Length: 271
Ligand code: ADP
Image (cartoon, rainbow, N blue to C red; front, top):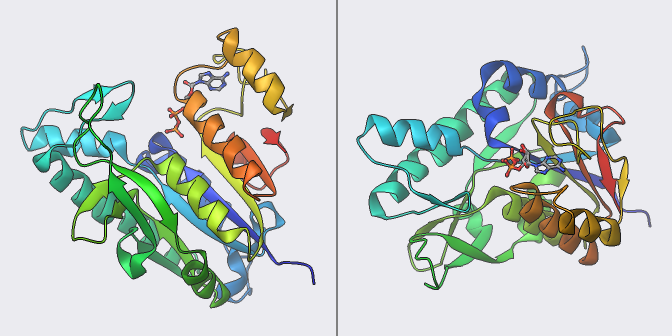
């Protein structure tokens, strides 16, 4: 029996936080007139079903600063002490998540906002202290693909905030790219899964400042060569590491594309 299709879409920080970009992204979800709400998310990448995973770092930095809390980053990763954990819990689990849910509901998409703690969906453990103490940051242990499938089969679009829990009462700040990859892997036994990273640029680029230089298809070997040459750098490296691991664990394909081109054929495909 052929599996139904699901697309796990990770939306980058800047996209969910700038109203215009968020509107553009959600346009891809917008219901065809007359289509029942539970079917409206089907347009994305011809997928039958959708799961959304979002970031929110810029909002966390802004709200923390309003509260007099300084943001400290190491290699683009947030140091999450107790006060910062409070901020990211409020901002990711509340402000950013619920804004997306409300906007999807306004478009007839039956969105449900969750963190990894809700329904015990995604469990992690606190990252051990190595050369850097990241504080309350989680490394994912497992995502519950069955529980997510049950929601998806009910026509619900889960909207996942980048927070997990350790099963002992602690919430943990967790990288949204990693969560998206783990969710995609956990759904692979149940669905034909596409993992889409939607961000500001048009795809993986040969020149990071030139949106016309998209690499349409990228193999793991080509990725390693381009990384070695410094063509692929910064935040794109953990994203692609997560992406290739997801493929090795049963995810059908990974697409890295512009948030404004979700239903199009552009971007970079990894297989
Ligand atoms: P997100 O917007 O999903 O949070 P990140 O900021 O973590 O994503 O990573 C994406 C960033 O990686 C891009 O905005 C870009 O600045 C950088 N980057 C580095 N090399 C490349 C490349 N070859 N193609 C595209 N982006 C690249």
